[in-house]
Image (cartoon, rainbow, N blue to C red; front, side):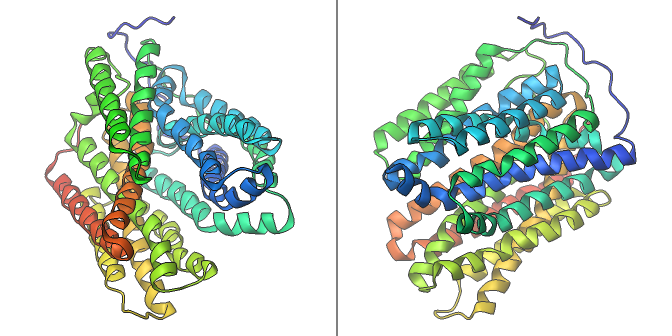
Length: 464
């Protein structure tokens, strides 16, 4: 086992970004891998009915194809981010990409629900390797003066993947069976690995050892919290939900106490002592809670209240991620020159206005009346996302980029899961009016997030 001394310094930093030609290819490797992981999240939901019919399982059982992937992903983000600081982000990224590609092959050849679930767990672990250090790698690919632009391009890739994911999945299923949805990852994964091995940067490594017990505590803690929130969203009994959340909280407190003197704690409380980092992470949770609330409640609103078809609903959901993909690089360039607190605050104000506009739709709105409101939400979210990501990563020391990158992904998934749970609660309490209630709640989250973002204007940036 590696030495766990808290006093071992970091290895020296590398230069400020990669040379332009190598940077382009490194970005290609990162973009392909991130697009794969993002597409997989989007297309798996589309494939569930086909998987249930083919494997002869119930809808309640086949939902675990999505759930186990999500749990494996969230539970291992912080441990893998911490491990990346020790062994290098490139190794974690390429290891995650290899596992994701192999697991995709296993998913394609799964012959039963248990074998598919095992393969999906492995795929979630591979995706965690990608997501946990993705933001950290970008920090070393781009020079500091272009960092916002780099995060903007990355957000554009994710937004584009989510936008066209359902369409791509439907096109594949029109010509072949559901295993093709997973098999299509294999050639792209191999290409991304071949490019990444040659072009991704070798990053500084921490000299301290890896806390395996701490990693286990972090994984179980986050896993139980996400399971508890998800159980609440599915209206499980109050007793088990409370137990899952309480045990997760207790394990988190044990982890914090255990790593109190660690130079790079698994649960990065050292980073949360930096006001800019703490405010940016909290703002991220609020914004993604808005997204989670919206993407759960709006399909029900469009189909049950407005009596639109599934095809129309898919069309109505498209403007949000599409405008995010367009705005992300624009906001990224602006964040290289203007305060992120101002940009993020303006973005969340626009998002809040969009949520209010959706909650107050007329009884029989026309197509354009819906589309422009969704576009307003995408405009606000896209204007916020990239500057906030830049703020989180820039407010952490370079040697703690792995911990910061893990928090980026954890904040996103925690916010989305919490938002989905709150949307389900709104439906349980308000029935058919639950969608409108949920959208109003989303506007409240956007308001709170905008206030926290503007507070960053009063905070002096922490020195690395």
